[in-house]
Length: 254
Image 1 (cartoon, one colour):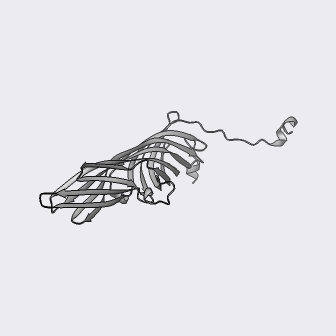
Image 2 (tube, helix red, strand yellow):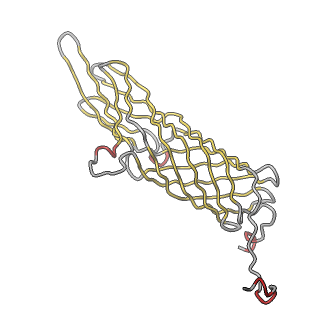
Image 3 (spheres, rainbow, N blue to C red):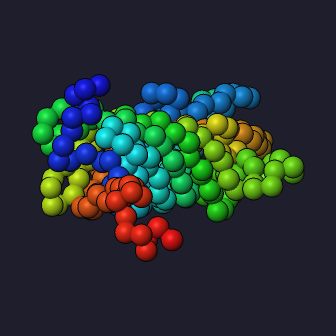
């Protein structure tokens, strides 16, 4: 603790910084951020996350030498592929689609000083996710997907397009005296409930028969990112000093 409190030149205490961030979304099966699968009636359905991205503005509020709050707003594009496979009929197809959202997080950050200019931090907090629209895509009338926001399935929901979730982060930053802060890290975002219900419709027709099936899967919205941030240089806010009334001129005491 004595080491943390002895940070001189690059402390975040009483500093409010503004910055920008770019966060590529990395497909991964870690923490339930990978594929969602369903098998029924001899048909296999799958939703696979593809590479996406998030970018936006960020603000950091320094509370003391080792603790800060961070918030902002980001545009988030989640990319997916919807797949169907019917082994008996030797049919397989894939369609790609995207989910657009806006994210407002608020996190608490704890810093550890590793060297004169390099710091490690870890954060944990909550995020509001807003989804403006439903989406659909397909390769033909015989194979298509439609994704509906789960909030609209609940008639009692007031803010149908809003979801909440957890966000956690760990990373490193290089702090300069005049040129701002440079940050690289990784984040995990997990909504508290699925964000979309995705229906995959599949129809197969030949000269003798017609087969039709609908698979419904839920998109969790979980994702992992690699984070790149830059914070502009800001000066510390001056700390207010209370004057001793006994040292004030008589006309100031009135």
